[in-house]
Figure 1 (cartoon, rainbow, N blue to C red):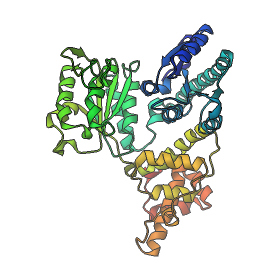
Figure 2 (figure 1 turned 120 degrees about the vertical axis):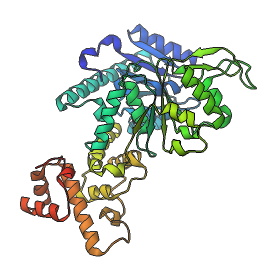
Figure 3 (figure 1 turned 90 degrees about the vertical axis):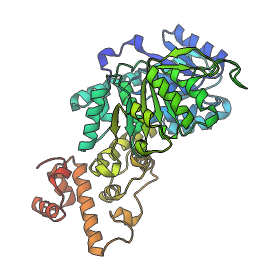
Figure 4 (figure 1 turned 180 degrees about the vertical axis):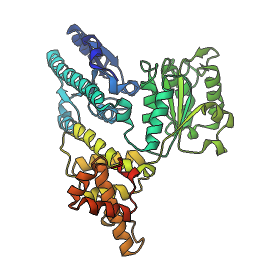
Length: 455
């Protein structure tokens, strides 16, 4: 993470996204005349490659664009860093849409036609806000003794602490990495951390979801093609791997990669070269490969064993959320604070019953599911799971005393976690004595390890 000594005016940058080449040129020229650096993009795709959390800049995007529009781009950016200023350019008929985008976290919107001075004024305010955010974040990390990695992978559980230590140990190497974990566990977060905390941070981070690409364009997307390589290939296309040169390529859900392409990927990894479709010329690759899977590749009959062993230089395993339930209250509060910044809403009261429900839930969607719940909670659209789940019990399981005991244990554990393991504010908030809390902890088998402290 940058510290405030690095935040110089010459480092400020505006990323301008618009499919209209004439407007893009005019806007970039007017901003550059005001002394700002501008990077132009004809589409939204390149923005995801940026190291957004450390970016001292502003995203300015048209709303109406082919492919990914400005609203989808904004959601993608704010999912990585909820404090990143996104300014939307809107036509007259899109004003209501832009107002809704403001409620969803956009910094501001500008209606066409507009004077260049209006855009500069908005961008200047957004840059000042961004400077304060980056400096405050750096100062808070210094005071807390934390770092940006702890802010991305939140938790005190030993499994998540081990994962952070592993990332810290391998980020500054060029070793290829395989990330394993269930759906929604945060595999792309880990991949981005490996990129952002390593020497390739200034290069592109190119993410490819192998399950989302249609089979007929998979090879062209990965390796690129020459003009005339196949019907419809009218001009040269640089593939994702070549676009990642100097940076990191992230192959998510790699178990879905077609078998015939696995051999070509293996050659690219081993030789660090590729050939575009329709070409015999080798293009050198200077990239780090990071792959992710929710499957057992070692015993997958449709995944090449040699590719598995080549990718499996270092394996990072992300624990499922249900395996670190003691982190759930902390994670929920962290995500609620991010949602507060994104939606500009206050966080409602988190009752012990809500916390008990959070702890009792099995979280099949892992951290992604928890983030969705935190967003709905801040928006006032979620007040807990179903009544039985709120009590920390599965529907129809166990006798009434067993269910009451499960509820009591869940409430106490949640309250202890809310107070960071400190027992004095815990028994005061529960309205019981210190002795009463200790007796309940002993009876319910709540150990010191679950409190986060020994006292």
